[in-house]
Length: 244
Image 1 (cartoon, helix red, strand yellow):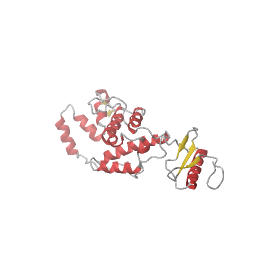
Image 2 (cartoon, rainbow, N blue to C red):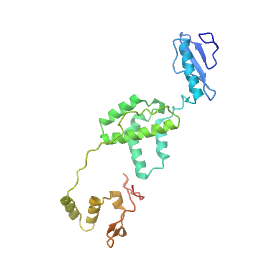
Image 3 (cartoon, one colour):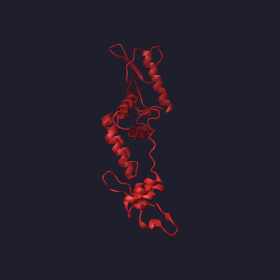
Image 4 (cartoon, rainbow, N blue to C red):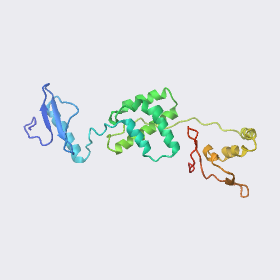
């Protein structure tokens, strides 16, 4: 087919529609003819669009426009499942998805999640929950969509809000020596050592939960933190390595 300049078109095809506008179609690397997502006012505009597509194909930058038609909820849950996460991290990610991300994005395909929609979602979340939770949710959403970019399902990550994933929790108050002693006395002889280990060790609660008598050496005066047993929201503890 010849273009508006009388030269034979070597890539794609343009046809005039009954409306007077022009439709452009081109063959992808897979051989499938695909139409442009919009029609054009002139044949020259359609030619220019085809030239851009041809350049993308030649450079290897072409992306199947149908690749992003993947349901976000299905992709996100599969993403979590395939990470090989620790039980506590797995539980955290699923909770963030269930409470803060999926209520907004579950029905959309990956390529329907745009920067404006993410900005609106984040603003609405900040009105109802704390900044720390929103930051965690945003980081998770960004990580999932970054994998979608790597999988070539979308061209670019739509999470582009600078600083949105940073947490800025306030400084926690520090107990005085007198307060620690008072708490240890209130806990009684059986648990008072755990209070001091937590205050001056410091050992995390999940590490203390898995601590045993042989971990306390009175001869060389040392406490050994070897294992951790974080508690899930179900009340079940999962024994494993320490966090660091």
